[in-house]
Image 1 (cartoon, rainbow, N blue to C red):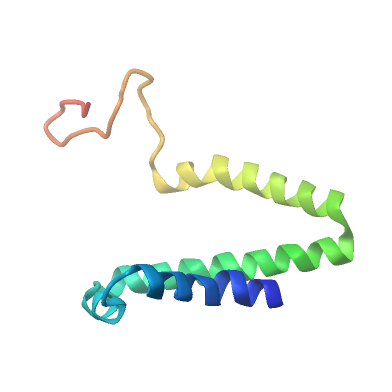
Image 2 (tube, rainbow, N blue to C red):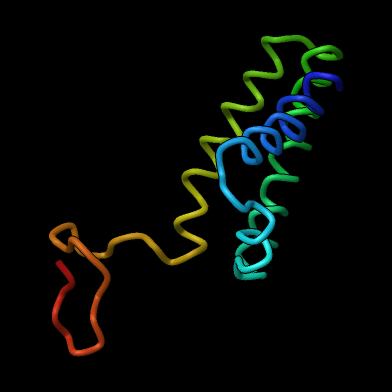
Length: 104
């Protein structure tokens, strides 16, 4: 937990404060919705990292990594199918335009 607090919470804040002039003004003027999405995805990433580390402790390296790689393969294969981002035409290089021309 100490590593999680330092690496995922304190060091990013300290690094941003040291390298971004007027950090408070930048954060106040930033669009709210992208900031919310960034926060929520970062929160999910942190919770996933902690859960992964706890899994290693209780079920071991081999099984934890096998589950993680298996889930990554399944989600990486199925996610594009669910979002409709797969290409139907092997020659198509971009999204289909409404006028019938292909994007390039």
